[in-house]
Image (cartoon, rainbow, N blue to C red; front, side, top):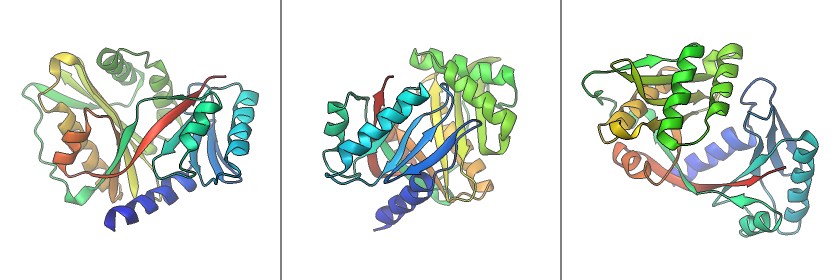
Length: 258
């Protein structure tokens, strides 16, 4: 029952009542769909939908038309408890591509053990300027092997317009960035999101991921957020479970390229 309560709260505060994530972004509710539209480097997509079988295909077509008109590719962020039950199949039939599913996990910040030491010789540094953002991007590209320039642009947007809604941190070993992560704060809600935790291969298995989770959770609690939330990959889920996180649902990104 507690997990159901937290999931319902998350759906309401973070999905149905979502707020724009950055400069140039807007959140709209169109019928039974809540979506965000912004610049090409921002996150564009459907945050929530309350559809039934009779109206789902029309709603999907409407979102495709909207983002085509905006000229940006987008994501339909589908959760396992969303309706109708065959919404994923309907998205695939409409031309979407399903990415790897992730596990929606939350924990009450006050319940977590936050005494997680850093490996010897490693220091954490808050990201406050363009140089720090470049280090975050470098870590992500080395850790995941993908172009992460859009993350850098999003971070720069946040730091310039509303630095109080995002906290990024980079772990340095002898001055070299070896791990990085960010905390996205949602003012007026119970939740703060843990995003982008990545560690370069040579530093994995030394506790950096756990240390960055603990650091960001402390910040979230200090800012008045009761819960921290993660969309966890399979590699992260066991670590988070041991730290005290609970599973609320699964979420799968369905992407559409315009």
